[in-house]
Image 1 (cartoon, rainbow, N blue to C red):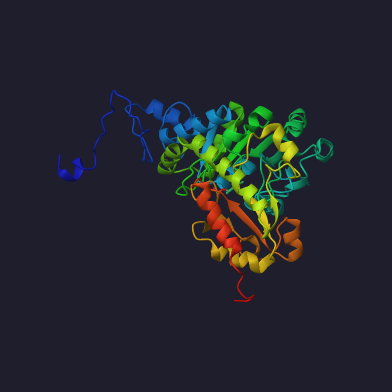
Image 2: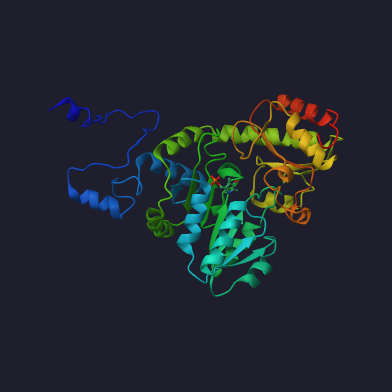
Length: 394
Ligand SMILES: *Cc1c(COP(=O)(O)O)cnc(C)c1O
């Protein structure tokens, strides 16, 4: 054969020994000796690998690893956290269906539900998440989903999953929990009645700010099979390389989460004692409104939390310019500590009233604590908090 053909038909030998690092199957498609396993791979997610939108071995390794951590039967990895959320909502809801959701939802989830309400006549009842009676009252014959988050952004609100999930189950309603902020190390929602657990893999699971990804894992194989059919149509699959990077990050998840949680505790305590800080809103603190509920089923708090600067909006502006080690950026769950001043960035289009109802003040700072040495983080914070504020308007 000609070189032109030979360079195209390179075959990688399948080794008899097992590679220590999970192999990266960066391929869109698989070739077969026989037609039968090819057809199988296109009809059943578990029989063979045919086309990577349907299934891919590297992606499967990630799905199985996260399912294992969550105590789930199986999973579907997606191109982003929103990919997993949209997939589930679109797979499970039909025109006219009803959703019960906690009122403090991730912004993208809130926007998707609003959009689906407009376009498909989906109705949504928002609940506090603390009161079983409120959920019981909200159920209609068209209720399909109870949607919760283990630790919500930015308030640290925690719904009472163990109290609410049995009510949903008894009514045949699927309970979906976004567990991004807790990670499966600190909370396993399936043990407390969730049917589906979602993660933005972009955050703690990949853990190094180099992946955009998501995943949904299922307590029950039948629901997984149903949603997988939609996933193939939705096409929100993850890339094998993103899955491979995530598998690499996942190996240190327990170590990272332990360090995140230890750093968060130290920094929350430091901030609570600082005169430039008016209030710290951290779920791990005994005076947080969700602390008691959280302690029922969340083992620790590594997630971002908020604190309010006594100097208000100007102090917020000044503070985000004054940190040196800590970076000004969205996202969380990576190795580096990140801050945001929502009133001048992510939430700047909201009115003061809207900010208040989202529990965001003019001087609120959100901090996503990384895994640096805590002393270095505290000296950066201390310096940024102590510097004299610039003249307003500069
Ligand atoms: C970031 C995030 C999402 C969305 O994930 P993407 O990977 O950005 O699509 C969903 N839920 C929570 C709680 C998040 O923090």
